[in-house]
Length: 170
Image (tube, rainbow, N blue to C red; front, side, top):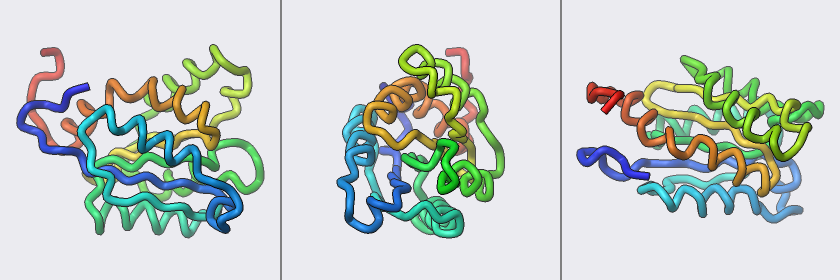
């Protein structure tokens, strides 16, 4: 995938949401999978963090990553399901200005090919200022499957979010 020629390397952040990961009780394979896949597009990972499934902490980190660090892309993993502790979509909705339902719908549709459990995903994608935020599921396999679906659109989305006036159809 190529960014537009005038575009410098994207500033990206990875946020893993996991109670066990935050306590050091589980290795973060999903965050590592995101980092590996993002290497396919020119990104500079400016932050890679793990927080527990706590809405206020997730919200605070998303705001910090977008506003203070200037991440143009934040990819989260974990907390998108239906268990009582899964609050990532709510935290994301707390901070975004506009939702991008097409990205989340595309991920769910593609995931249904692999598992009927995909319809339980509540992942959200949206825009905060000049930042694209993408929620991914918590398993490394699901991370790879879902991120692969939206990867072709990330560079263009960030270009447009950051104000590019280039024609979309070219």
